[in-house]
Image 1 (cartoon, rainbow, N blue to C red):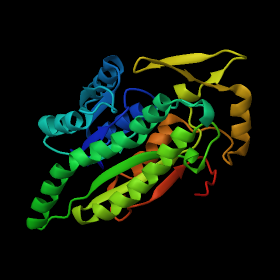
Image 2 (image 1 turned 135 degrees about the vertical axis):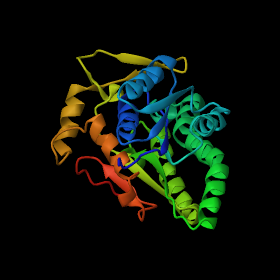
Image 3 (image 1 turned 180 degrees about the vertical axis):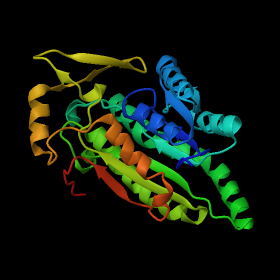
Image 4 (image 1 turned 45 degrees about the horizontal axis):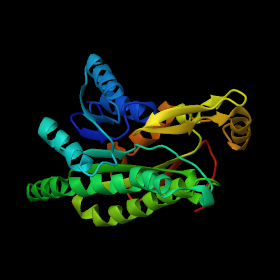
Length: 277
């Protein structure tokens, strides 16, 4: 029996990068996955990959920041698979600037994606989770569900990232609050905070080259100068950035039955970098 056999897992931002690896790992362990991405093509590609490997998945395309997204995301899981067992709030991007140059649009785009969207998704899921937990309790069954929110070492503060750092610090507070609110519902609510992970957002730039990606109609600069990556790697005790598969493994581990008595915790997937909060 696979560890997540027949569990229903909702993973935001799972068409690319770390989110894709999370979705594939969940599916490989038997979960039915609701895959989300801003764009249809990568979302459906991950769904096809899961199905080709013998798993089950469905796409829910769209921006997690859209006001109607949370209800649509939850409804997709319930209508398709009649359940919600795992929620991973992974979607995100960075849009950096020093505070005196940061626009309201930059501030709210990052806060809405990293903090407001998880809040809305968890709020939308609560009625289903509560009803299911009450029924299971009446039947004398103890069934655990899992929420994994994604934070970052930047939650302790990063120059040029007042928006991102604030959002990632906020998700820590939300995690610890929900762990207390939802304990009676047998929901383990935890957080994984990533250090430097190799993704398209942290790809090395050559010289003065600048790369951008399209995110909700915005041209967002991505990539990091090679010298900065080299410096970052030197302070990582394990000597290198993490791989997306390793980041996904940290998330997956919190969704396993072995973690049924772990809640309200923050796991740093950072290669040994210690973050003081």
